[in-house]
Length: 500
Image 1 (spheres, rainbow, N blue to C red):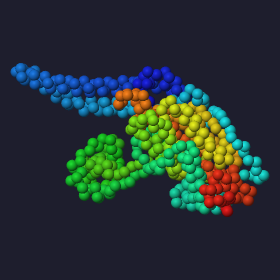
Image 2 (cartoon, one colour; image 1 turned 45 degrees about the vertical axis):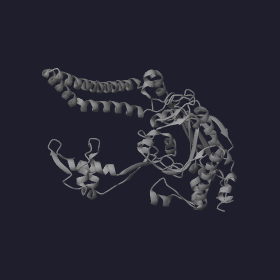
Image 3 (cartoon, helix red, strand yellow; image 1 turned 180 degrees about the vertical axis):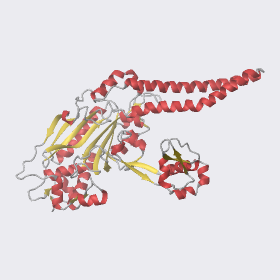
Image 4 (tube, helix red, strand yellow; image 1 turned 90 degrees about the vertical axis):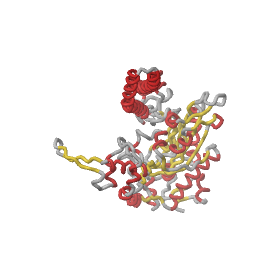
């Protein structure tokens, strides 16, 4: 998220960065929003100041026996009080207008990031390993898994719907072995602290890492309903004591839990020849109470969300940085923008397991940390002896929060091409501003002197499901079995082949 002051001072640079992402310039519009915000704040402050001074002047006028002036001042104060709600609303609207606009703007790419429109303009910077030569036609992972009877998409669809899988036996153990191998590597050799975070997070956490508001449709939302309408209706005395503004609520929610003429009324509009439903005061209180009592959250799309938010609304000492964390978690994505892509197999699932890497650094450390983090992810593939290539994403293909991203693409012989298995991004202070995550430099002496925003980085270290896909395809044998990579055999109880 951007600092509007920075945009005001660097409008040309800001719009140039947007142009590199293929977006139109909007600095003029944003600065107009900021002008409106400043004007609304100023109007409210001036009204406050005048109300205070007029109140003092009333006392002075009355003391001086000037009743006419005192009455005029009282009338002025009354007018200010009458206009006060409108001034407050104008201030709220102006602030929200600017904040909403800033929240929807992607990060500015680093100068070194190549320009381009899409994945076809990404640039390969390194390649490791040679693809294996097969003396038979290699199969895709889902063909291998289904032939083994250990990968079941049909039953998963009956249980949960499309884009889910049930792995059994040796494949379930292989998935667990991959995750534990990665976590052991990152904690024991790469210096990451393992974390076991919540899988359900609040709006604020999703906003902090920029999954909200732009990518709302790609997420899974959870709602725990609190009480039925009948139970709520029995608490009318309590509800009457808790008046809550209704303007920001959605009226249709009432229909979910209330079916009573006491809480809504219908009126007929002859112009549209239709009925309109309107909540009564009681209905509004019921809805407000219902919303206050229920719990909402989001299933994490990646452990980046809870890990990065561990430092939200905090001030770290520079000595604590860089802070490196890793977690192995299930992740959940609606894949709303991926209709028709990878409909078969495990490449694009609603639920998948991933080992995530997150670093919190000073601004001076972040670029070096980005290279280090990417190297940690590469080490996973090297030890698994999986051929891969490393590409730097162009401006048109990089993520919303990223300033620069490396993708690692593993070779899949069944598909005959490289596919993404890890994405490592440096975000600068983009996420930190959304989370208000800051640090205190070592040389600062005052309590708040020199405090600045941290830099955040995240990367897959790596996607476990896709790693299993790569192992199945690269280690498949002509008889349909799959060799277990040497580095995984201790995690598989010495098993060298699936099935054993």
